Image (cartoon, rainbow, N blue to C red; front, side, top):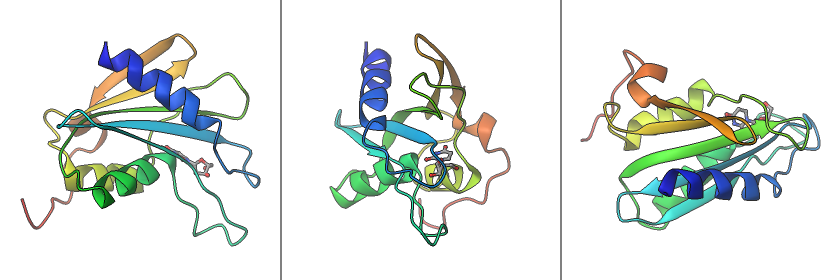
Length: 134
Ligand code: THU
């Protein structure tokens, strides 16, 4: 099942998280409509603001590899080895709106190891500022 694969990959890439400042490790796995899966982790910085979230790492990797349409993303994060509920930040939601259909794109939030909740993008980002080109 693709959902389980995405969760597994998100948990796996979370181990690559570079988060010495927050200690909050996040992993994401993004499914493109051509079947490819792109993973990403959060990458922090001593100057703080250059920090990139796991979701955006996955999106930017994907777009730079030619993917433009996406079906779902799994996200897992937390301070400890065991993930806790971690919802995408507002900036990442705006990036999702740029490349995904809010009526169809699924955001799978891992709430603990073994459980998850799925939301449509439109639920997480109502009344979004829409892409200028679609
Ligand atoms: N972070 C993510 O990577 N994704 C989210 O959905 C929420 C926050 C990261 C940014 C920062 O490195 C750390 O988590 C703490 O905010």
